[in-house]
Length: 429
Image (tube, rainbow, N blue to C red):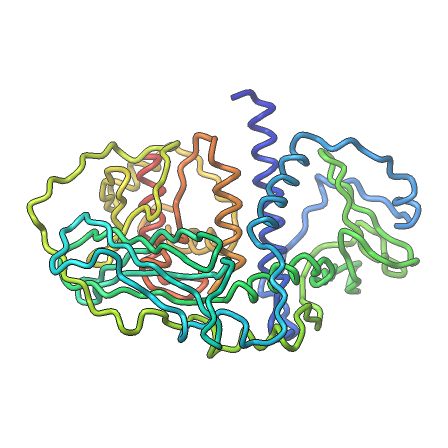
């Protein structure tokens, strides 16, 4: 792969991280005001600073031909929009109902063997019992054996006609229970996506200017609709601009910190908001399905290669057993503290990401003593998979792991973080 192609790919990743942060902050169903817990100090060294008027900046900007990277981003967004078409509804009764939808176990057997695939057909119906004619429901399926501390996610095929095929791979022996949750009906997914695309001004940036003992907060952003004098901060490499309203009697160089908050605004109608009541999010659809008994059946185990970057990951890519994540596509090695120290010795590791990476940073010193109903998270997962699909990278499927462990916390517990890091170390050790 050429250096230009790699650079474009990495630029896509950085842009995606910005888009992801924006997506995750756009929808606030209760429209409450939240100040972020992170207070970021700013280093002004890579920025060129000037005082200017936003209006003159816009008028003087030349029209540019889209680059290859920009065209690729447009293609990704177009694909996502095609996946989530508008689904207007006149009444909540016409939306998908977990109670009225039907679940059928295909080709049922008295005995299942470890490694078998178990398929379930879901027919989505609305609250009046009518068959849905389109797909797009946001579903989360999981199989588990609590006594074994075992769990795995599943593969869901949407036929876009109101029917879905939910496929489970029976990874372990014992009694297995199945769960299929309706997180959001397709109408709710459509509303979230529309609201997300409207929410360009939901996040407010506040810049802190310090001059001696005086400090002032002013509004900042990528665009500011203001006739006031502005400070313009241009990033040297790409000449991308960020603006702050210039405080009186202070230079633009006095900007030291940045905080964010959400505006008190919602892009959902009252009718749409009713779809996101707690009682309607994550409703079980397989209440009457009995547990499945799984036996060993003397089936031979498939041999796998050592985990390495560039491997294609199936869905699901693994499962938990006795609290430990076990991959299905590569051979893991278990790393104790001594092995981890030996592996990391002489290596320089860059961690670039969001709050999940912050959890990694907090967790690593614990073992190295010498040192997701989240629709928008799922869209992030699909987008990054598409961007990275033809690069020689190692993927740690945190979405798959979080579903398998059955944790509904956007920041999962240490046992999950530890297994994510173990997978990371398997790639580099």
